[in-house]
Amino acid sequence: MLRIPQLSGRRVVAGIPILWLLILFLIPFIIVFRISLSEVRLAIPPYTPLFTWHHGSPSLQLHWSSYAFLFTDSLYVSSYLYSLKVAAISTLCCLLIGYPMAYAIAHASPASRSVLLMLIVLPFWTSFLLRVYAWIGLLKNNGVINNVLLWLGVIHEPLALLQTDFAVYIGIVYSYLPFMILPLYANLEKHDGALLEAAADLGARPMRAFLRITLPQSLAGILAGSLLVFIPAVGEYVIPTLLGRTDQLMIGRVLSDEFFENRDWPVASAVAILVLLLLVIPIMWFQRLERRELEEAK
Amino acid sequence: MKSRGLFSRCGLILGLVFLYVPILSMIIFSFNNSRLVTVWDAAHSPTLKWYVALAANEQILRAAWLSIRIALVSSTGAVILGTLAGVALARFGAFRGRLLLAGMTTAPIVMPEVITGLSLLLLFVALQQLIGWPRGVGAVTITLAHITFCMAYVTVVVQSRLAGMDESLEEAAMDLGARPGRVFFRITLPLILPAIASGWLLAFTLSWDDLVITQFVAGPGSSTLPMVIFSKVRFGVTPDINALATILVLIVATGIAASTVWMRYQQRRRERDVLLAAAAN
Image (cartoon, each protein chain N blue to C red):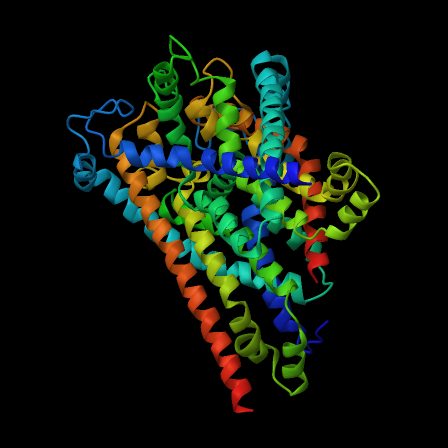
């Protein structure tokens, strides 16, 4: 470790980003929580104050009505559960598609490895919104996939692909696949081939060697990739709005609609707090993995 | 062993096809004459008419210009803050607030965007009530929001570069009596410059591309390019968006190709320098 005599300089270096993130990242959550405990009113801002003055002393006004509302209306409960289901299934699909890809890249020659990694990351640099939009053109009733299938004679009527759960899974897997592949690759690349050779020498079949050696060793990569897909997918807004069903909304869309369409800031804030409560454990889990990864690099 | 290698290699190829078919289809249909986007009008295609339409679309051009300016300022701000945070996390050992800083720099990466967007807007509204600033939402609030979520990515890039780097050069400079600031600017900064450059590019792309957070903190008259695109494609496919996508893909592909060639050139020059130095001895 470096011994820097001037502590004040260090304090400034660490203090500036801490201060910035406190104000623009941490404190906003406190404000969201505070507004979730207000009631909506027709004013600017459109919610009741937390403190009201009674005979010169402040009195705290906490309204749990937004939360009560969310739990009694089945619309919110069902979109909450639906978001969890969609995120879980998409994460699993990402893992099933991403694992063989990461494995193949990790076992490719060093020269082709960098090219393959670039090919994986390249779509990520082009607009996320436009890549989701591209799927509308593919999945539509008179879209590319239906036209090809009709032409091949596989189907005789166009399949309804757009505005289905399937379209949302495709959209999420497509957009988040690099986030699954990169941590998996980083993990698989470090594996020692000697263990697998030893297993083969001892007569283990490839499948058995994979299940007993490679898979357990790559658990940290699987976890990091899965969390990196699952957490943002729960609150996904763009993909279900462009590709998804109109009769079943995901929670991110519900939050946005409450805020922009219904102008109900307290309910939107309560939705945000409930999603956060759900995600706080996965987020902390991800942070621990991330910290361990960086310490190992040292 | 052989069969599994084959399986994963097929998976890789299929996966790459999956990643690139949508992009290719967008490029192909940008030259299609038909308004029906996905029906190829063989008699009148290929045509450049959607590109011409795009060049005359003032709304899109204005939004693109705004997006570029916001992305330039936010990525620069994110790089400064992210580098400070990365240096603090990788080089300062244990200090008060370390865990807090580490947590606040990884959480924004996974945080669902609707939550970040909502919380930032509510912060700006609260600030405006308290101190009268920022006055309304617009380009300023968008930039502040973008700096905040982009700096998290820069921090991770810089921190992992520093973590994988030998500290002996910095220690040697210290032993020779260089002050910490001088050590940073003469030794650390040049060594992490590639990480800073890729962090800046990443931040620029993220800012340029962001829709959800921006929608929360934008006001009337501050529509960025993704906001204009989203409002157009929400109600169906429009061919000029295909043309726009093609241009963006081209720019990115050229940029990546150029940076690869440049890095190869640097690598070769370094190798030559090493050879020359060896020959001189």
